[in-house]
Length: 258
Image 1 (tube, helix red, strand yellow):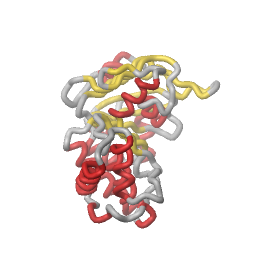
Image 2 (cartoon, helix red, strand yellow; image 1 turned 120 degrees about the vertical axis):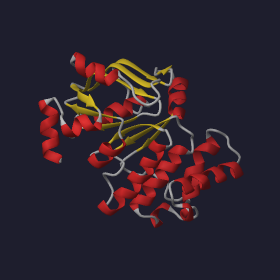
Image 3 (cartoon, one colour; image 1 turned 90 degrees about the vertical axis):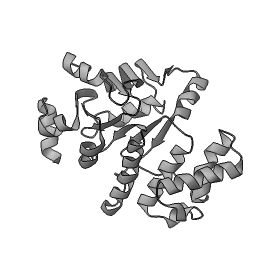
């Protein structure tokens, strides 16, 4: 990582207060190095969009933040808590960090409302009435309040992904991680999920979004991170990225997808 890229990657936006920090992070899968010396800081209320070709390490990086993958070297700090092997420490960070995947991972035998309220009731010990009210408020927030009593199989893909977002928000996280949340959706359903994510950004949620949706990156991101071969190649504002990227690898990638 060059000095210029390091400076861009560690200069936070949002409120200016560092919310997430990755310092010298490496990750191996056997002999394959998936992440190489990742240095990145994300500010409170900042939206960072991570782009890059398949296999560049984007998903691995955000999965390391909440310990879905264990990093092999370096340091990861979330809201002042340094990630360690201690299960209590991992649970603390996961309580602060919501995650939305490509697949919705909803329980098919539970109603939409029960999918959303299960974790607050079991983990945060919310009384059922309070959890149900929270769930209905969140369904209102993601604009599908009428779906509360349905089962996931009765919903479109876009609606199911919005339920998955509501389920993550039910734990009142300080950070939301999105791992290509629209890639499994039909084209006509993508926008409704992106609109929900835009609303979250407007409300001040700290977000890291791995996506191929360049329109979302251009409109919503405070900074865009371009990754290739397990490394951060370039970091900048959307205006920089889409009008004057400086790295040849970034230029090549954008020329192929824009």
